[in-house]
Structures are given as C-alpha cells and as structure tokens.
Image (tube, rainbow, N blue to C red; front, side, top):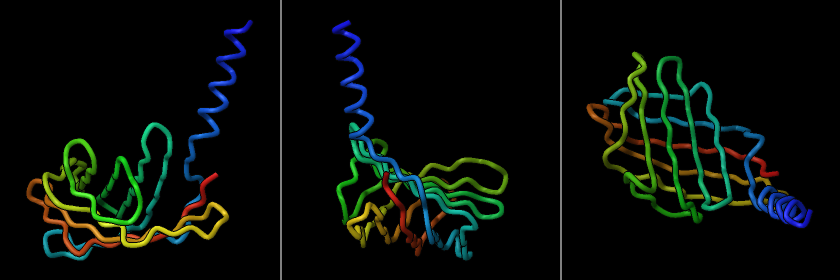
Length: 145
C-alpha cells in the first residue's frame, strides 16, 4: 500500500511539472526553398517541459512540410542545428524526408503575458540534402496549461 501511495504521489508530481501547449493561435511560417517562396497553410507549435524543455514547430504547405525542433530550449537565442540538440527537416512533395545537416534556428522573441500565453517569433535557415532553406520566419502564440 505504501508503494502504491508513493507511485501515485510521484506520478502526480511528474504530470503537474510537465507543461505542454494545448492551443495555438496566429501561427505562421514562411521561407525560401531553393529560391522559391514557401508559405505554410497549417502551422503548429508545441512546448514541452519535463526532463528537458523542447520547442517544436511543424508547418505544412499544400505539398510539403518543415519541422524545427529545439531540445534544451532556454529562451531567446541562436540554436545551431546538430544531430543531438536542434534539428530541422524538409519533406518534399513526393513525401521524401530531408534532414538538415547545417543551419540555425533563432528565437528572437519569447514572451509571456502572465497568463500562460507565450508568444514566439524567430528566424531560421538550413541545408537539407539538395534543399537550401533561407529567409525562414515563424511567429505565433500558444497557451500552456
């Protein structure tokens, strides 16, 4: 019985300590892919705080997708794309996934209004196989529960 109580107590703490975004508003992502303008039709942002803080931005256009992921997120700054920390990818219109081998994701603005609503704005650029992604921008708000 004591072990069950301890398990429930630890589980409740872990659940309350982890925050995950539930509502996205006004999210946008744009970029230039191989010298052609790219704009998302649907963008989602998730923010998870647990064993490490992670910010993930996923954007879909009518025929392709971009994903930016920052592990160990710590606020505004520049995150260099690498295998272990910050990653980016581009999925082309044939469904082929291309992982970035170099580049960066910048978080220019990360603010909160005191009610768990966070606003993120930044830029990015990366190289993924034969895809050169430049002049990337993202922005939007999310609500943390």
